[in-house]
Length: 94
Picture 1 (spheres, rainbow, N blue to C red):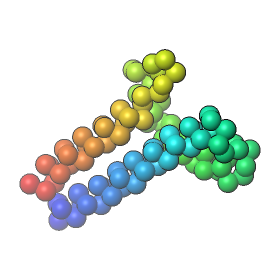
Picture 2 (picture 1 turned 30 degrees about the horizontal axis):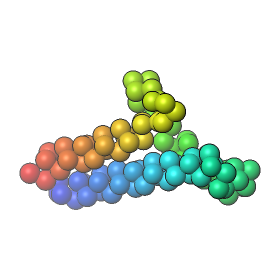
Picture 3 (picture 1 turned 30 degrees about the vertical axis):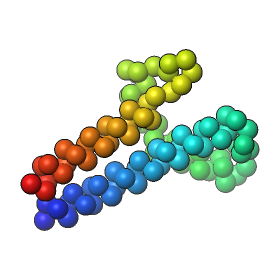
């Protein structure tokens, strides 16, 4: 039972990690004018990733400001989620 719960939570966390990575890549593509943010599809993906990731990233940005224009909050969040998966595995699978 615990292993099944862990697998479900791990899958949800992994999916969220993919959304964080997609958000970061999309922001780089927009910043370097590779994609047009006025494109309806790009704008929709951008709104979705912003709405999903911004609540968690906002709290991290309050503690860790951007260093020289580089936002480290997605990296901190990804590492935190990996740490959370390790904790969940030790609690639920053992």
